[in-house]
Length: 383
Image 1 (tube, rainbow, N blue to C red):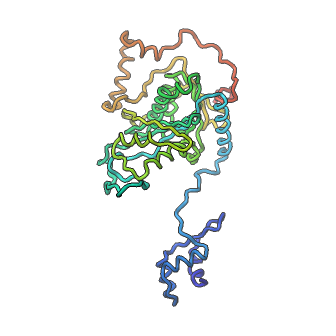
Image 2: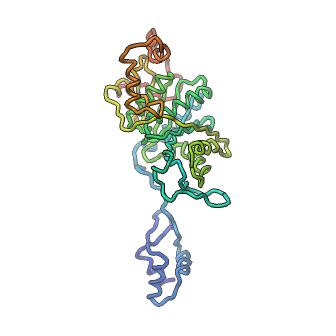
Image 3: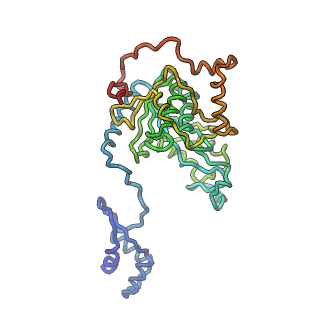
């Protein structure tokens, strides 16, 4: 024991906050060094001796959060808690949103284990060319009713897909669950397709959610590196991963069925459907278009917290994604712009009504009766 302790001491590392220690050398290497010193000890015996000395086998543990020392980190978590409580007290929707890990659809290995008479035979290599496609699951989790919805795209993980998923949820489930709501809260990560600095995310929220449905949307982003605190991660995505663990996602229908079949002891209910269309990457929003957004930043961490309201005279929606998978982005953009270039058409009154301003100017904004900070203060507007 003393000789082994002396051999491993120079290459020992440890956690300063606990008693955990580890060494670089393998059991076989340590056994060979003990043999050279005149002690015939087998590798298993070396392992038992190391355990008596307080060593153990460990894998890397993801415990270090990026930018954990951000000065506004604690204040942002407190502010999110305040907003959640205020919206809950007002009976307004609180949604946690994010993109789940992308998955290849086909005869590929899926991490995890599943009970079966024998192991499923899958492809040796995970080549995209052998797949039916790459699934891009975007989740919307309703914290009030413990219900989730996953909208699966098959092209880019873009802000257009993210907002389309939220708009689809509101149109098919949200309005029925919250019939009197005109204001909703989105909890999102600081990066990704719904990132706090992404212009297209804000522009799409304005056009496809606020202007289209007359909704006011407040967005609160979790601090950078704190995505695991977003409720959707452990309340929706975690159970889905457990439900399909070890089961190859061979078809789109099978993938959707496994998502829909996810449940928990707390009564989680999950719906899933595909989002058709090509969501092109690399799209930008100009400074001029950003200036037309009805966006107000909050006093607390304005980069992470802001409110977008409907515009009384919405701008033309030039950034709507294609609605069918057969159209390229350029073809869809041309089809969107042609009616505007040709002027109004008497055969499409419904489309014209969707972008027509009210006949009379809106009245004065009523005084706030809720503790919800929607960024309407004068100092916030000055930004």
